[in-house]
Image (cartoon, rainbow over all chains, first blue to last red; front, side):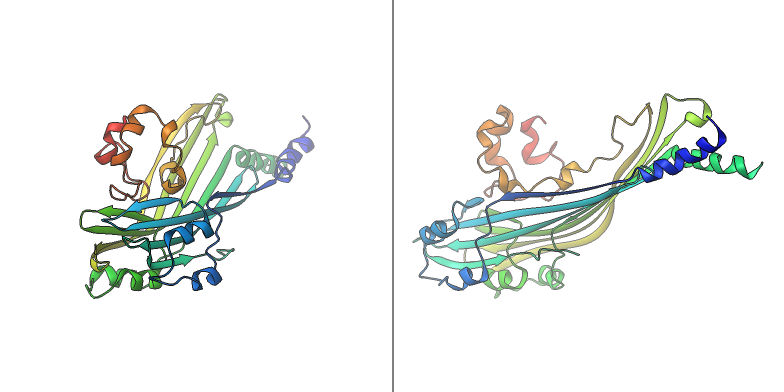
Length: 121
Length: 201
């Protein structure tokens, strides 16, 4: 290999750069919008109505006579650069979730929800 | 040494090493009042009040006489530096050095069956979660840093998969701390002791 070619090899390597991006979605589609949450009425809304609106939950928890429906939608966004000498990946995961408490009669007692911002910065 | 030789030598040295960084952000940071809630739990606070302040938790479990709600946030950084020994005439060996660190916030609140706050615990800290060094043939086949247990998906997604798990794991499902009835566990909790010992992992 000539000296000139030897010099060019590392610079060519630097040009062989790449990037990567991916997204990952798991869980129950987030139907618990602010508009939906405002329609809920403690003591009136039933467990069946919540499940009819949001579908099967991610988790059902039995308390003593009461129950909890827990909904989770997990979003991961990753992006990275591949420069051979230096490689970097960043993965941001957000959790959209909602929780509903029901009494012995299946009536809503408490509820809360959170839909994380689309961009974590 | 002539400049014409220094340039390729420097470039060659650069070619022999490489650095890889992984950054994971898992969930949003906890609200500033999280620590105060844990430090001075007030029994007149209801679960609904807490949920309106902090949002839904990431971990939920029934316990005798009530239930627990858990919130957590993790930032994980993994750095790996690799060298080839080709310059020393040892083409078949590579050296890898890696280390991982985390920033973790966790809040666990305990509620009575009447939905009153009765206790809490919070921590926010920076930790080194391990690292390693290796000399391996040709390329680094064995990872020197492992954070898979910290970056794994939340267990709520595994809802319908229980019947397909290995028998020891399936038989132990009622005792697992991620099923909503037998306590909660933070990310990265070792499975070799405690409620998951019988799963023989």
